[in-house]
Image 1: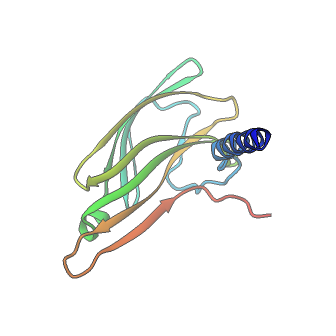
Image 2 (image 1 turned 90 degrees about the vertical axis):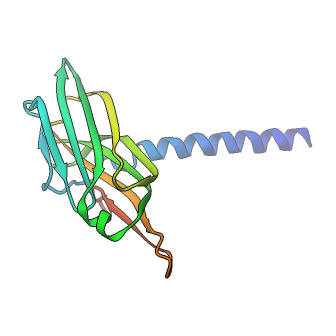
Length: 166
């Protein structure tokens, strides 16, 4: 009995570790749309803005050696503010890209949970720039909800690089 419990425990720990590994490389190699891509050769220090239908990201870039410092604010664009009451959950991602617009590395840099759509989420990160990185872009995945008294509604949204299908 004791051996069976240990085998099951080792199996579960292995499964958890394997699951963690696959989530950190999920988007590597995926191709980003050219719209909204910011060149990092050379790094354009200073204030920038990235915006689409659902989110707006105002951010500042600074390079120090092989590191890229990014400080910014995630806010919501007009479309969700008009159509929904709040954001249920939204993850903002930063994708580092190679010359073919393929994801070399990526990071979750901000997250909102059950916030009012007028709220802002600040972030500050330092990340190592790999040699192959020539550009960056943002992406997100999340959901908005509307607490209309006539009926609850919601929508899941995302803007992410497209993974190759073989």
